[in-house]
Length: 496
Image 1 (spheres, rainbow, N blue to C red):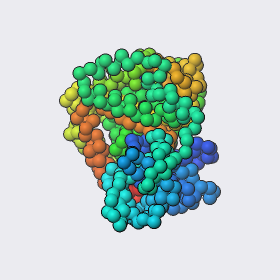
Image 2 (image 1 turned 45 degrees about the horizontal axis):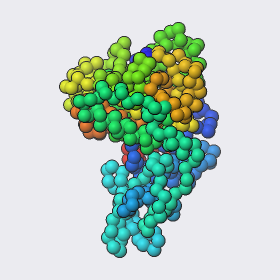
Image 3 (image 1 turned 60 degrees about the vertical axis):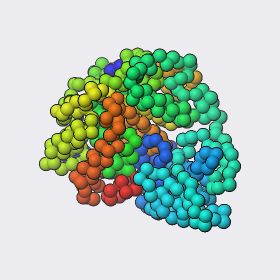
Image 4 (image 1 turned 90 degrees about the horizontal axis):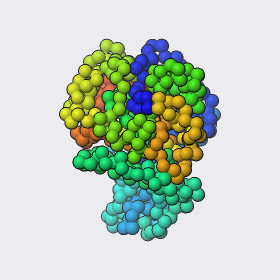
């Protein structure tokens, strides 16, 4: 299928030559000013509520008005409380109060609801919250979810919860079809290769659960990779420091926004493929790799060319480039001072070895298990599928029989056979209301250590990019000259 991994481009642009691209006209999907947050697992942090409130107030997250005075599109969120019958949505007024406090940066505060005073505490590192009745001392758990994350409860309750509205007919139809990988009577026989590997079976079970939960509003794709993992991890860490990307949940395949100026979406990638790449390296062309990911459309895929379950253990990679060179060029593109690049690359590789990530292609050690594979589960909102995805044959030609791909993805057919290509634009990949990602590593050690590895990597990069002026220079270069209105030169992790 060409390079399923579709690595980050072998050559990153020289930061000194990056031009400040003029701001493009906003269209209905241009949500740069939302504030970028990762496509992650629920529950989300209170930053979602903060962003939602800031947007609904017609201001950027940092309090500034957006261009032209128009209100930003809010990130849709629900605040939920855990009662004896399960999770229930809080009433709109209580949700509003909580979001207002969170938008001001408060993590512990009091609200009044139904004649009672409650202390709300969102100071936990995992983003979960707690409600405590001031008079009785009784506590209940709270969480913040994106709208559509889970089927809302319908029962009334005597706490802060309230019954939500109905889902749309289209969402109900998609839910009736069920998880994408099981549609059309798909056989689960590819999972037999996981027998005897309890870690892999657990990872796939988690992916299946995600599909069941999100199949109403989201189409799902699977991207296999191996040696590019460190590049993806560095992207995610830089995104955390500079752009509020919540890297503890997923890696980030691409981060250089300016590299998408010429190819911002699937239609433009198809056009370039037909005119430039079809007779010149196809999806292995460096310009294709800069923006595109090769994906399968089912967890139980059998082809063509790749079986997701089989590829998961060993991973999928091309070796026609210097990974060490890619890493150093990436760090330079992120405006790490040139004198510090080689030493920082050495430290990142050593850090990777400590946590069990295979960096054998970077001059480091292989992982002890020999299982270098990683799998990204990639959910894309259904209304964005045609914008970001096209149906593909091996090596990238368009598969016209499955176009437009949204019609195919919205059907009740089997998706076991069929590839696609995804435009991994950071503008969408860092917004949880557009794209959500989950990752699993075949090596159990790194899978277990990934969050600790990300934390160390972020701390390392935060020290290098410690000066506000350097952070602004780096963010401007990555973004292509025009930063989102919410962006400030302080460490963006404080606002994520």
